Image (cartoon, helix red, strand yellow):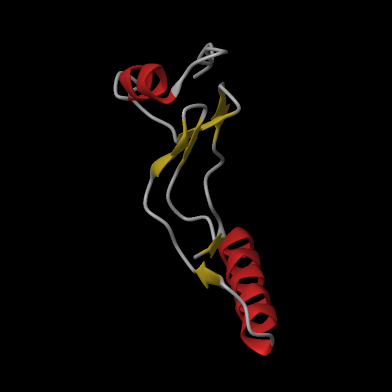
Length: 92
């Protein structure tokens, strides 16, 4: 199914649009809706390897950064909303 993806949304507009979608995973990047792709084993394996590499690099040096292996969907700022499943690093 092709869905016309809206442009120039803020997070509140994106969330109102996203709950009306019957299927699919979506993220909001710089105000633009991006359709997520279904995950397969190759994707999951790569995601795990990225997480482990980030964790190792951060653990080797004293730092205010940390990495988590999986995230919950959430608002980053007014123009970005990420879906779950991204390995992310943060400055504490």
